[in-house]
Structure formats: structure tokens, C-alpha cells
Length: 267
Image 1 (cartoon, rainbow, N blue to C red):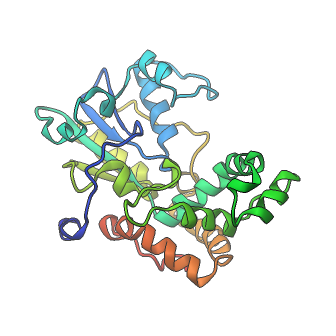
Image 2: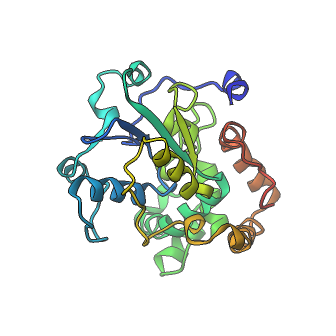
Image 3: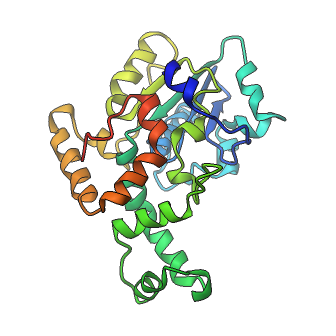
């Protein structure tokens, strides 16, 4: 990871998204990017802080509810976001990541309706190159995975490495992984084992459990059933053109390199 970070040019811009979360009743700071199970983690922290199980229809991402239940947006508190690297004492900094292609497919499954709605309402003069998609989505048709991927590619800023929506922004950018010195990097693919380790070492309350609902596929299936995840990923990836795949691998290049994922796992 250190070798990869030496080559990685990280932007100094302040993150615009509340991905760095702390809690009132612990010394833990988590970076929870979208689509790595962040909803499950926030519910887990809320349940711990209230010592109860809350209904699963709460918007735990809303700032007002986060504050009510003791979740703190760390980025928001710091006058200068880079001060996060100076936090000392007993704080333990943890981040969560996920295979970039699995995260992308999860984005598509959840966010395609929102993107479809946005495209269907945009004036045609704002949709240069998207006229056909605009007409289809306006008539109620679904957005295909290749169309979703092409939208990401077309709206990606190849200079600033910024992207249209945080849900598919690379994790390396969301968590500033080469700038913040994390004590632990957890992988969604073996999250239960990682949480057991944190509990065994006394960093996490032994009562902490991820909710059983709204789980990513990696948490729904055991290691013996990874073929279900692999098949789902390949079914999506084989819809893409070689050019689309090459550009996706370039966008998520550092997520692959820094977190040890292989770009050919599902190709």
C-alpha cells in the first residue's frame, strides 16, 4: 500500500461528503464511503448508542438524525479537513472498502432509478449525446448497465479526477487513504471476520452487530457461495464494451492497486 501511495497523486481539495464518521460513546472514527455497507454500519452505531433496535426505515444518512443518535460528521467539525491526520490520543481510525466492480454494480442497482428520473426530466438541450436514452427513460424504460457506465465515463473529470456523484467516486478519493493514517482497513468481502478482530482487540463493543436486512451481497452469502456473487458480476461486466471496461479500470485504478483487488477477478 505504501508503494502504491507514493505514486498516487492525491488532491488537496476538502471532501464534500460526510464519509468520516465518529460516535459520542467511542474513540472510533470510521470512513464509510457509499456502497460499502455504510447504511448497515450507521444503523449498528445508532443501535449501540440507543441500546435498542431501531426500525429499518430511518434515514440514518440525514444530518439531523445522525446528530440525534450520536453520529458525528468529522469532516464538518474540522476547520481544515487535513487536520484529521493530526488527531492523536486514543482515537482509532478505520475505513471500509469493497471490490470496485462490485461497488459499481451495487451503485447501478440502487441508483439507476434516480439517474433515470434525472435524465427523464432534463431538457433535451442539456443531454447532448443522451437523446435516445432521454426518450426511452421518459417513456418509462429502464436504464441499462452499459448506459449507466457510459454516463459515469462521460461525466468523469480526467484532470481533477472528480466525478458526477459520490456513490461511484473512488474510495481512495472519498477516504483520502494516502493522506489519513488509518489503523485498520476493513474489506466488505470478509467484514464479519474483520469485526470479530476489532471486538477481540477491544476496539469495538462486543454487542455490535450489523443489521440482517439491507445487506450487500458480500454479507448475504457465505464464503462457500461466492459463485453467486461472481456470476452476478460477470453477467453485468460482459454487457460492456472493451473500451468501457478499459476506461472503468482507469477510473478505479488506485482502488485496485491500493486495496489489493484484481481488475481481472470478474472479467
